[in-house]
Length: 482
Image 1 (cartoon, rainbow, N blue to C red):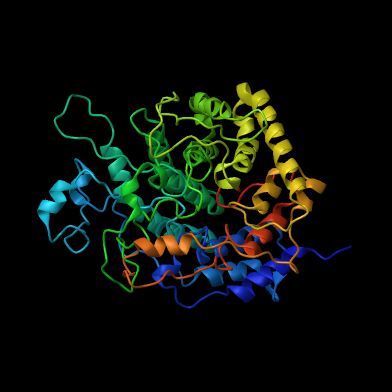
Image 2 (cartoon, rainbow, N blue to C red):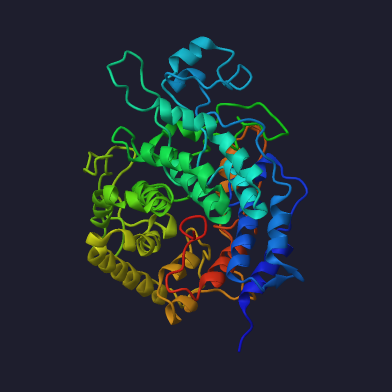
């Protein structure tokens, strides 16, 4: 019998991207591509394989090693960088030092409508670092610190509630909602803490309720900076700092789709940037809310093409689940890319959502079957050539997790002895393009995906895939694994 490839992949991670004593801001690109993600990978693997040792140490040892030196923010996360854009309740932490327009109030007045929200999703090490540290240490002090970081965001949500009587005050600008940039990612991190630190449930419950209610409010548009706000494509600050301040580029919205080289209309529907990911996080965090999301999930199922591909070309859906007119920024295009926005993400999401939508189960089963048929046909067509992308996010590893347990799935899993070429960097380069620690003359931090990037590099992605390969319905880490 062949040896289990899991330890070999984990060993390769330690060799290619070992724990570090210091972390420059340019490396803190969110848990999907930073050492924060590797810390959680080893923790999750340790739970699934409690007897596993890597380099003579249990996996939990490496989880602690990876998270121990990840820096934490020095102050709570201000929802919007621009104090005047925050509506009725300007963030108290905002100062002239952190305002990009401090030197020119007229310029600020002219651009007050351009809001610059903090990153609240899985592109934020500022939130994910404390969350993963709480999970690894089981220490409620870290849970309380995580919640203290969120306090201004929760205050903004409370301020956004409709007033009982007409008011002349303008409502606060909406927060981003998708998994990578927004509150869907926040919900995942809250659920993560609740799962790994069970005694934290009373502490995180209020935040879960506030975020979920905000997302379900008819007045909340579901948006993602990567495809809804072209103004996020450039940096508005060039100051430098060697620390991890709360207003650094690690917490501000980075360039559009920093985990995507294939920005397309599919992103607005998919798991990473779109409505599918938001539905999944709400339901898995608070299952009783599923009935309220039945129309939205049904509308997403309607986007599947006859051949099983997803989503279909067409205009986006608004917050009332109705089709709205398309726009010049998002021309129609059919089919998404990988787990992030394609049929892989649809299958992986639907398999975990199915129990909570009894009236849609027949449609869900049909959608899963159609998408799997398409994915396996594509996989067989490509067997004569090596895969160019063996990652979880866009590549064959995400496809493997979407296929049924058995030969189809294992056929796509890579062996440690044959690593494929890495795909070009998008997280590090995109973050550096908007980083406060990067000047116009500073090159990107990397030209290829770093070996420790969980969702975009083969060794950690393969480690996760092998860790869950025997499950009937494998879950995606940092999405629906808990």
